[in-house]
Length: 196
Image 1 (tube, rainbow, N blue to C red):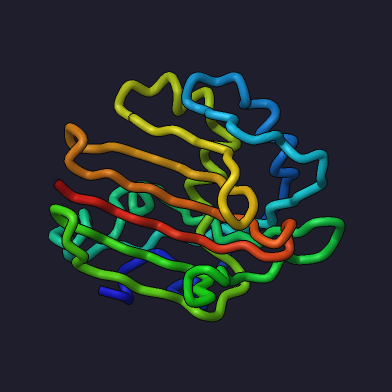
Image 2: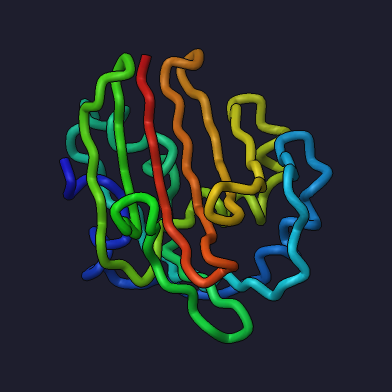
């Protein structure tokens, strides 16, 4: 199962198709008034950049696992692996409050843990959903088949993006958190799936 999840380590040997970057808070300010975007913390006056590399999404050979390994992420044709920089310095990965995990992926069924994977070393994370939202919020808001939202909020460690989606009549809920800690010195990634 661990080989099927779309964390950065599973793309280590994957050919990159393209790359680019943009100012995160500049994009966030442009979409702040959309109905599916919730700004619950001040947007910092900082030049935080997201640097992405594009990879093809691997083919899913066994669809039975799909609900447990992210229908949301597998729905993208491309995956966007990214790191962040502030004032030209790349942010390190790791969450001191969560066993220093860089990436955490978890799936639950009826509130029972089915699968959990932690990555302890990473230099990027899968930002496909965040890139999609920051660049396509208007399209997402107008798509009646996409019940998704983006939240910018404070956390115990700093500030974070929270992406949420409900699918199949709310039977599958996905939540991704990209958390910036220690005054934007480090970042961590979590993706959680709950199946009812």
